[in-house]
Amino acid sequence: MSRYRLVPTPAQEAVLRGHCAHARFVWNLAVEQHAHWRPGRKGAPSYLEQCRQLTAARAEHPWLAAGSQMVQQQALRDFAQAMAAFFDPGSPAGRPSWRKAGRDEGFRIVGRRGRQWDVRRLSRKVGEVWVPKAGWVRFRWSRAVPVGVKSYRVTMDRAGRWHVAFAAIPDPIPAPGNGQAVGIDRGVVVPAALSTGELLHRKLARARRGSNRRRRVTLAIARLRARETDRRKDWAEKTSTDIARRFDVIRVEDLQISNMTRSARGTREHPGRNVRAKWWMSTRCPATRPPTCRARRPWSRSPRCTRTTSTGTGGGVTDCPDLAAAVAAGFRWAKPNGIVLLSPAAPSFGRFKDYRDRGEAFAREVRALT
Image (cartoon, rainbow, N blue to C red; front, side):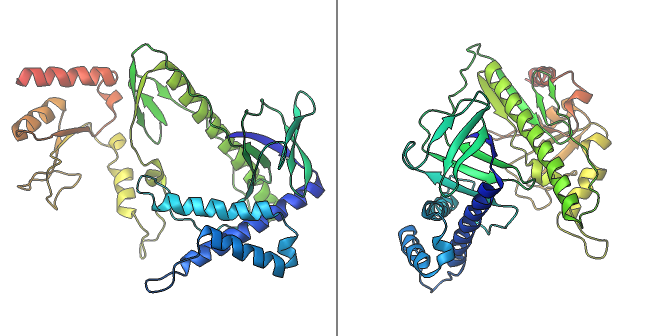
């Protein structure tokens, strides 16, 4: 998606807000129809049946007929695609949920360029896109519009900024061909650490929340948050592009950052969810405890398998003072065709120079045993 900053006039902004309201209304109706289904009831209507229902609703309600039929129909198509992705076993998408005014503002326009919609350039930094019912709307021409675009999406964030994103598959980044591989260790304090020893940081914008009771203060906070989000996205795009240009093989740690940073709300009398996990992170986090190394037998199904020493007969997790002790313990547990997992319980940079140093130390310990 190639996104551009949209600059509508007040009259055009009113039309765009109407399109967003109609698209959200149709989407929520589709969500309600599918939420009504229960075992024994008739199945929810399909996309074609919903289109027929939309035609009947437009004939009955003039306020709905005043909007763009393409915007409303594409909202149904987007919902159908979201439901298909939800039932796809290979897709991580969740179930489509309700859309809220002020948070989920947007609509999609499809069709052939030059007929249903079009784009033209006015000057070096200004362009225009044709929006149904709104006419030509200006946007900042920050880069050329991709060739072969068949649809675009108009969105508004919480800060009140409008954007237009043209759907296009970007060209792949060519590999350098140097045969180098890199591992990426994701974290909370350090967003990414490369196996080469590089620590990738980004600067965070800090701003006091102030009062949330007034709309103008809320809007000011939303603008600050939007700037922070832009910085975060810009950092992620530049960092990922730089890594892709430098290495042929990239391995990324599957770490659930959102779960680690999510707040566990609650009180002492009525604790919230995941409070125990948050307690472990704050009191027994690797950064606040002596460096150790854990050896784990994955074939274990013992219910006593925890983060502390486990002596169950089926196996478990054992804390070792150093890497040599962990390798020795794994060697004692090793069985034919078995697996022993070694997991550092402290930052590697506290004991080793980098990932390569840790790997060489592991190789030396294994060779010493064999």
